[in-house]
Image (tube, one colour):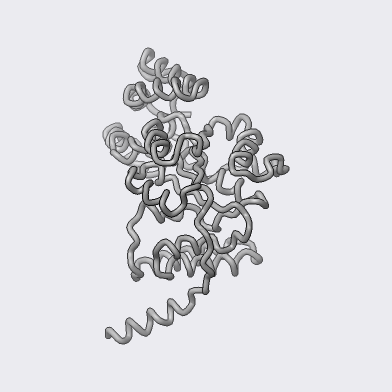
Length: 308
């Protein structure tokens, strides 16, 4: 039986394409989760001076480097089935990438190999979970890529936490205030909305000047300006003409249940001090979030905006 397994593994791994040893990425998108990172991924991939792998969220630095397993093969088969929805010309490259991503032995060289298609372009990836990395992990990343830059999109933490709950909870759980409050209090949800902690940790290792901070609000209000600022930060043509159709495209909108007053009050109270810090550091946009949270607390959750 063991010989049979080895034979099967050899046949599977023989499908993995050879990848030259390229360099590490130039930038990472680190979140925040539910703050427009999928929209950003598609916008950055459309710029000819940038290269992002065809798969968003590589999760190299936040998930242990597991050995090859049948579970990983199962995940590969699911993504390969999804690849048939892609344009015909894109399929061969996507399939080769997925074979490499799921089946090749993992390590720093494997990770660098995910950017093999970049050639001379500025290369990077977006994994929102990186916003919660520990300082020790960031020091290890700095040893691999000392010149890394980071893109961090922020969203009103009240809306971000509610959007995460709508994504993760079932319809039955979402109808329960208790289940929602448990989701809000979850450490992972709290960490993803403590933006000042992320900025402090990353800034202490890489320097604050290497972090671009943008806002989810700008995706709706001034997406062209936001992207031109990001392009300039990454050192590519900042005036590259953008496709209005792609700019206005929405991704993973999810369910639209309104945020109930009791839940809005809990979130406003939970993030009030964080919003004060954000206003002090980043100014007008977080200041608007703070004023909204104060209206929620004063009105018992009925500020005319909660949950939109």
